[in-house]
Image (cartoon, rainbow, N blue to C red):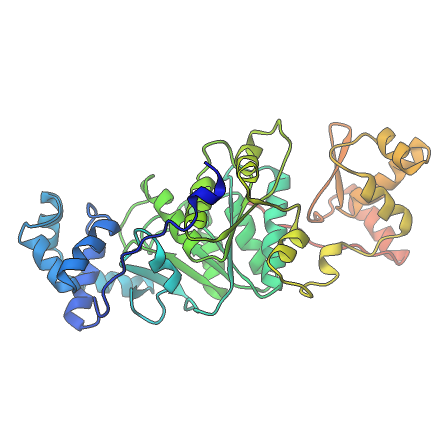
Length: 403
């Protein structure tokens, strides 16, 4: 389906004003969020008739809405214990209509009644951009997601993602390493972290950003919750960037929600033979913006002047800069030599110097560019020290490993 055909299909129903304003209605809303079998879209329909959270809960308890399981749960659940578990998790209960509830989220066809938030408040005026993609991403995809997150954060943009392995982790880490702010949207209860290996990342995010979920404490990370999570990622963001993903990647769901909300969608192209390029290429074919790196993204977003010079790489001697420009794709030294008009040994020497700087790497006898200089190791450290003594310094540091 063409990209334009999916635009402007967000929902027209809204949560009634004052739906959970009174204390008793707020308590009722807390219970409603804990019902596992009633989807937000159905709650929203009931709200159009009953107008308050308390009235909707009474209807369900009377057996006039919801499944038998939901009716039984509604009769047994009380707001007090849920509120206590929220306090234990250090989370806030943000209901539709509250100042912290993002207005853009309510434009979804099935907006959540409430969000549970840990960390910093969701500032309404913030510019947010989502970066999503494959969990089992390539090294190059990981580096690019890190660099995109770093560039956006350096430009004052809040990076949004899902705290999963791979692209999500890289984008969050890039934002944090730049000293910026990031928002993680969970597909489980606000008190949990999935996968468990993401806990150190989530702890870092809590120090500088926000962790968000539509699920109260105790909700497990069931598979169907992650596609639902993706709609919130899209709604929170001005634009969605897809970095790698296979044909059925969940990042396509984020992109589809973004388009339905009228958001911009960008995708990073890759090799046509790489299965991880399937999702970005599909989006580009359907009209998504093609970006090659941070510079393209900031330009498309109309952000300039931020990170000036940081995106251009280190200050390089002319011969190394020309050699770096000659590394297009995965190339053998002979090809670089031909492009530069120098002997193969001279080209190889330049490539090795670039490798010591972390700007290229050798894979199976071919050289390819990296998006983020890697930490030099072993043999490379000695060479880099020599480069430093000669007054030619490269960037240090690189992307953190996957959580």
